[in-house]
Image (cartoon, rainbow, N blue to C red; front, side, top):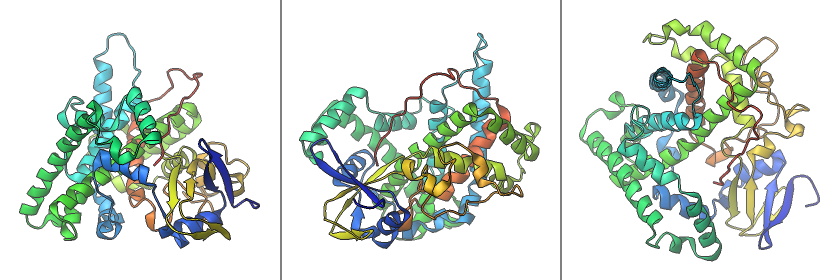
Length: 417
């Protein structure tokens, strides 16, 4: 396109795609004309196949993601964070070869699943204590296909209708159905228990209980909401935690500064003290700056796709119905036009004011695209940020972290949502 607001390109099969690159184009797509774009049918079918029909209903769930409710979850975030640290220490203590290497992807997946299970569904996955638990294994089977299964899916997607793919009685489809049913049954049992209780909102903090109080959902609708929140909230936060640990290893000066700040407010000797100032953790300046820079520099969802559902206009350009768009936080978050000449550097100090306070840079509102914007932005972004703060503070307070192979080439696997 003639200006810099959007880039038009073609992929295999001569299919045309558009990448918006200016704040104006992003604003029009995500805010002004948000309902002119939807996730493509293929993406919706894939998610429907994995987790069911749930789409997070923002209006009915606003209370669940309010600052007050998220603050009520701080104790649970911290408790699970400490559980993770304690179990890592126990793991080290049982080793006889002095090897203190862990696979952070495993631990991040387990702790974030336990958190999202309790906060979202009121279900204890028990992933940290027992990685062989029925629910954790069901979730792993549901969300982690083998490489051969991925290749088969790509082939089928290119040459068959998505709806037909998932009706084929393959081993993978049977496995998905059984795993999904296991998790849905667990959520349903909790929901039925909540429906039989009184004063649910006053006594329970999970999101399903708050959704129940809205009276906007049937029992099956609540199960769908629980599954939707599980799918949206687990993998992304687990990825953010992995990137955070990677950044701490890669930038030891950042790790040391963050450890000093966290320990100054939460000494290691007070690990198990029940009355810690948990709200203060979330408000630590450099901790917030570090988490924001991780989310900027390493967005858990580097790109997402949308399809125009009607003829529309973006940045003065006519967009025909059916045009495919790619929204790329990985691109926007690194643009020098929006973030300055050091945009491609990892630097938490961009979120620190001259007085040492935490601040958001005074750039364009659409420079930070990690959670998108507008009516379809991530409803749980404050939840995810608070969770990440607690997880990181527990790790950096207790451990010094290094990469096992610091010179190895980083291989990143990306999916599209």
